[in-house]
Length: 259
Image (cartoon, rainbow, N blue to C red):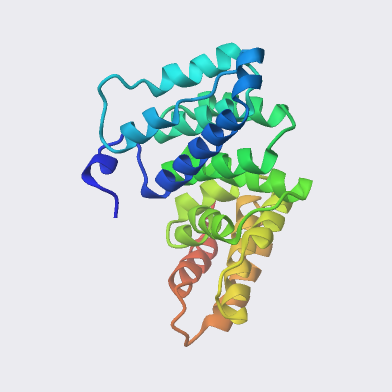
């Protein structure tokens, strides 16, 4: 449970505290281990103590942005400063485009890629907005294609944010299914799906998504066929998909379903 001070941080989310603490700790450790080299080369690192004081509710004399800007003014390719800057922007519920500039710069260095991805995904998950959820899906697709690893917990969170939590909201589900191509959506859905559902429930959820993808693409005949087949399999069950599937069949039979 976050403290009152932590909850007061704009855009704050308890999941971020430990992560940011570890990141600043890592940077501080590197700084301590390389003090002489850093001084000789003019490197500068974000001030961890300032972040921890800010996290704990202290505001006086603390300027995280100034710390990060100073680090980047000394070394514009500082992968850690860029990654934390991107996190910091989103933690304050800032603009995705601004955060993406920092994450892109960090990834472009070719260094500490898992570290950058970890911070990037955590930042996006913590914000939970339409634009950040869509970005999560795009990044997951990129990582899948490039063979990057993603923790089971992060896969589960992205899967929930972009798919399973939207099964009862047609507009929300359509928004997720429209981010990528149908082929990439299907492949990324399978890559992210590490849920503990029984095999039959996983199968039904997947069929529901495929039927919706066909409908989004304008393939009404295919969509209706998939919905009807799923409706038959769900008959008499207590699945959460019964209602959405019944609605979809009625919608298409009545001539609706245009997106």
